[in-house]
Length: 150
Image (cartoon, rainbow, N blue to C red; front, side):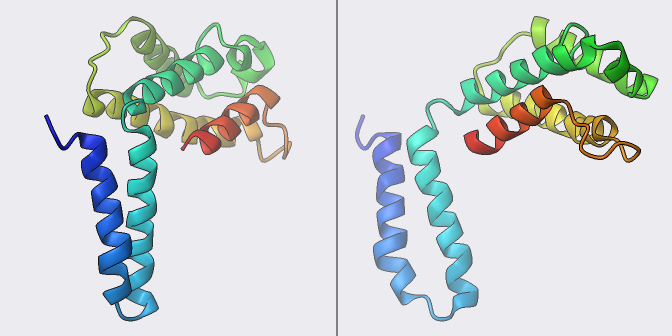
């Protein structure tokens, strides 16, 4: 069926960039529109793989921070985490490994948001105020991969 989703997204980017943006007065209004256009351009390139990318990121965090993960496997790293955080990591890792993977964005996004929230709690603990800069290299590398992916 025409137009395809990709064609529709391309057209939206074209219309917003070529027709709407030139008519917008003032930087205050134009900057958010430029951000929307940039986001749509990103979606055009990646919309077909977003669900797989979100699940892959969850798998990466589970492999890294789960009970058998390299950052959690080290007793000294694991001992730095409060018990409730360790339990939460183990539970979410198990769910990620065994959960049914709905091929929908909302399901992948929900799991990914739960990982992001948990990682936001874990990273400051692993980085440690008592020993700044002690974030394990593999955790740091995963954060960089995440930043480059998204």
